[in-house]
Structures are given as C-alpha cells and as structure tokens.
Length: 318
Image (cartoon, rainbow, N blue to C red):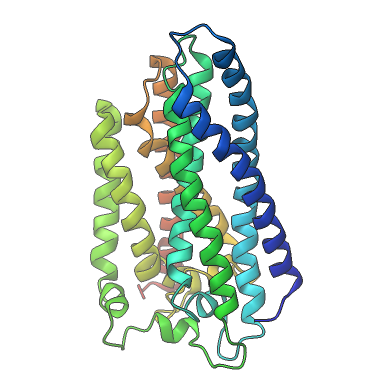
C-alpha cells in the first residue's frame, strides 16, 4: 500500500517508540539482572539513577500511545476512502489477516502500559519500593509485545492491496452469514441480559469490596460490553437493526459517541482489573474502587440511553 500522510505519521512515531523503548529495555534488563537493594555500592546507586530515565521513557511512550491509538483508528477510517468496498475502519481491519490481531494487541498493550504506570506510581510512594524490580520485569514483557505490535502494524498496512475489493461493515457484521460473527449477533437480546446481570454483580462486589471477584467481573464486563455493543446497543445508536459496526459510531455522523463509550469502558475496567495486583493503602483502594464503578456506571447509563430513547420516540423496540 502506498504511503499516506497519516501512515507516514504512524511509521515515524513507531520508529521513535522503538528507539526510546529499546533504551528503556536495555536499562530494564540491566536493572532486573543487577539491582540488589541490600547492597550499598556505586553500581546500585547508578542503577537507581538509570531507573528514573527508564521510567520517564516508559511514561512518555504510554502518554503518547493513548492519542496515537485514537489516531490509528482515525487512519483506518481515512484509508477506507481509498479501498473499494470499505465504508469505514471495519473494512480496512478485515482487509488482511493481521487487522484483528493488531487491534487486539493494541488494546492489550494499552492496558499493560497503563498498569505499568500505576505500578510505578505506587512504587514511588513507598520508601521500600517493593515493585522496583518487578516493574522492570513487566516492561521487558511489554517491550516484546510493543515490538510485535509495531511489526504487525507495518505488515498489515503493507499487505493491503488498494486494487482489491474488500467487505464493508454491513457484510462483515451480517446476521445472515453462517459465521461465528453472525452467531454472536443473533444473540443480541441474550447478551444485553448478560450485560446488565454482569453490572449488577459488579455493584454487589463493589459494595462488599471483594477485589479478586471484582477484577474477574470487570474482565467479563469488558468482553460482554463489547459483544453487546456490537450485537444489541449499536443498532439503537444507528437506529437500524442490521447495522452492527463497532467503528461507524466513531464517525461524525454519530457525534463521535463511540470515543466516549470506549473511554468510559477502558477506564472503568482498567481500574477494576488492576485492583488485586498491587497493595494499595485503604484510601487509595477506595478511590480506585470508586473510579472503576463510576466509569462502568457511566458506560451503562450512556449505552442504555439509546434503546430507551428509541422506544420513547417510536413506541417499539428494534
């Protein structure tokens, strides 16, 4: 595929990410292998100083990665204009076998880098720095996934043939096909029941402060929310029973409502998922519980508005 200004921007940022992340990776390996808090030597002092540089680089990558993810989706939409058959980002993602894995990998990396930032923040608050080596071991894993993401991204965009006809979102998310997607879409009402049941259980575990159960329920809430959004709630956003695309709601025609929904869902589930893995002070723990449930609740309210609004206006369900 030929270069576009958006693609060129992504490639340049990928190169910068890879350069700076490689520095942080080198420092992380050195710290993970050689740091010993029980020793009082020049090497330990040097490693502590280098840890600040590595942490700064990692934080830089994460805070640029968030808007870059939004820009990535925007780029997919722009590319859809030059691909025959594509109506939105869904057609571009489905144009090669690397699109869906890349999208999933980007989401995993967002959660992973966000968790690293949280771990680093908690580590800096405690004098004993109990997560000092752990956070750099975690970044080594994150670096490998970041490299895989960048390589997959380059391969995906390079594999797109602008002369080939691709499926539009209507064909990809069709309920008439005999695919696993159509089977999921056919369970829209059942998924909506699961969605509200999952949220009700979230409220119960929030009130009882069961961290592990609350985290597991947030993971299931993330998955069920995405599935129910595609199969059920999305049709009310579009006010069309056959329109199940998770990307079109990111467009201007729908007031970019998808961005708000996905941001609420990300923050709510991230705060919930990260609870059992770090030792928080009681005040901090309560704050993170509250952030999680309120973002989850905001998502539930917003996504529920569309079917209720449609019914109030038309007196029927789709």
